[in-house]
Image 1 (tube, rainbow, N blue to C red):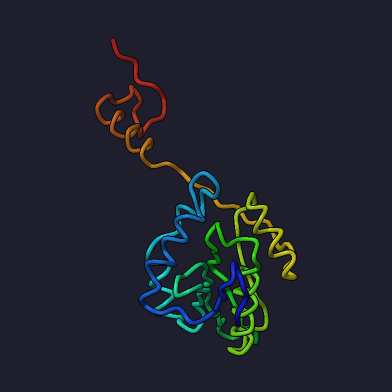
Image 2: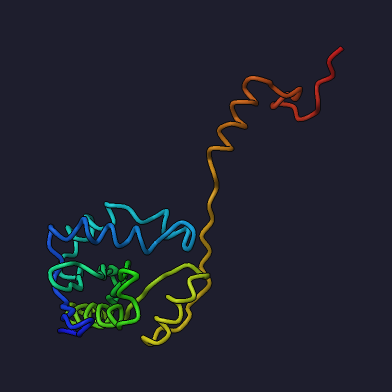
Length: 184
């Protein structure tokens, strides 16, 4: 499949091992800490290499003149004792300078086609509740809002400091008997 941008074709193809660094760098530029905290925290090289190893047929790139400009990474989920097989679109990213050329849509549709061929009866995605562009995009692709899902985080750096302070300056409380100890 090809689309023109600036006189050159955008081509969809299977991701190769040579594409992994480019895909990772695009993800780093798209899933930024300032815009998408959770996506930023979970985007790492293992996301790309792991999916390339386990589901290579669901790792697709869009390229222009040999340069990777977008990607879609997915997986098939088969539940034991269930008639349902799910296609899970895990990551979709397009270089900022190539957004608005329907590359994300083409990547999504190709991934959907491949998942259907592999027996998926339903597709699932997840994104941050504040990621309005993704919510709008997937709405246009036919997805409907599912149940509310909440991700919670806890900064352990501050917790570690508090624990260290407690060891250095023990409170005047007997942990076995919760009444305060009185010191003369």
